Image (cartoon, rainbow, N blue to C red; front, side, top):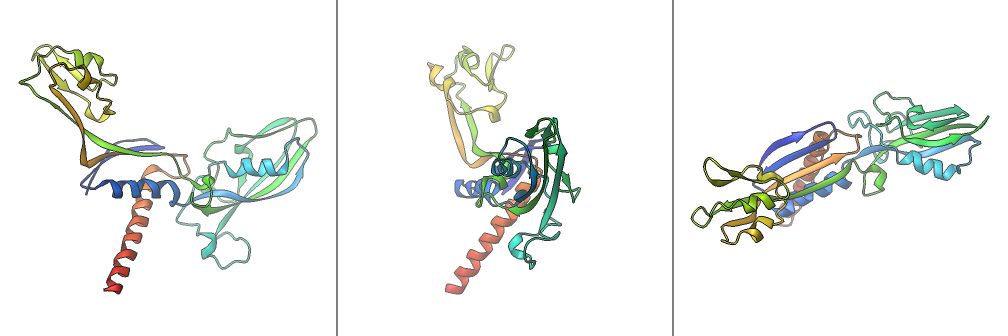
Length: 265
């Protein structure tokens, strides 16, 4: 297997994965979505809430606030021997505000500076006059298999790497295919008087060029062992952390299958 990074930024990464099949890359996609753990608010103790929003609704909003996650210092709740929650398996976030004002996610005070809201401008509730809110929220590790609030990715997808072939013997260089291509994949070179494939990775295989080529000189298909893989995170983890953790989880699953198979034989 060969992996090449096409592009990346703080929340998104695009990889070219070669030498694998569909079941493998789809398993990696699904693990990125629902098995990579992140932090999210699981329990909320409301001490005072004078606002017009119900405690349950406020707790639900808090649970959906993406939190920066430190996988090295926090352990899953089921692996901790504490009775309720402790600093090893959870992080406390405090909220105490008085109106009139709009309370945002940035007003949450975390007891761990590594676990804080990804975005500070998520509105939680509005306080009028002398209204007050005071609560403690407990964040814990979880996975998307349990609840969507623990999903680290907002987008996780893959597609075949496009293979675009132009038969130079049939092509009359009319440039109609380049003109009609909606994604700028093809380009007409006037000097060479031929069609060039300038951005194959941007092709979504709509085959507009194939339909518009009267001579049938263009073929568009996907390479069976090569994929464009893209994930976008909610900011709780960096995209490379999600990929790396997902690969470790997939390797662990594969090892269990190998051990089970060897035990049966």
